[in-house]
Length: 98
Image (cartoon, rainbow, N blue to C red; front, side, top):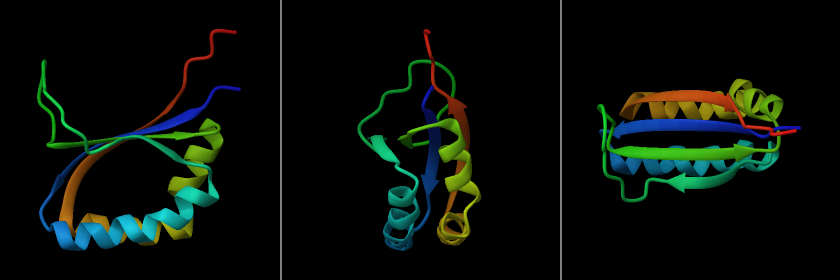
């Protein structure tokens, strides 16, 4: 079964409040088996336009990725994030060569 991924690009306007979002999102991420592969590390845009922060989370399945996003716990965290940042997020199914 292919994994699911969240790929996000974020511009943060209030770093301190964004840290609260990170604390609150920890519970739903743990519940749905999320693992950070990228979390705001150094980046260099080679093509196109990108926000300053990139995040990639891996979930055990695309269903888990969708369920986490739609959960009440994550939506509560998202409300914190929405007030202090702008972003783009895609949920994508991983490649399964089988």
